[in-house]
Length: 97
Image (spheres, rainbow, N blue to C red):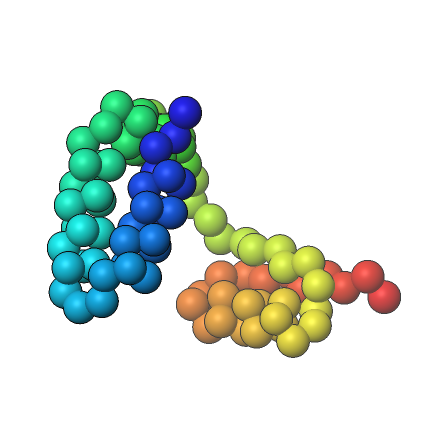
């Protein structure tokens, strides 16, 4: 079970019942408790793992790119093609019509 939703409800109830700075102190303390839970560690591990999987493999050598094809010659495609051509690449701009 995830303890955070219950802590959020508790903080809202406490904040409504206790005006002033006490509600902020209570919220900080609850956050600190949640940050030290095994659920927090597990969710951080999942987040880190997902982001690690997004990074490209460094085992392959980069390819030299000389030509670029842009599919779609609308406003965005034409802009991408223009910027790419200005950088010195050969550009093929293809539209469906």
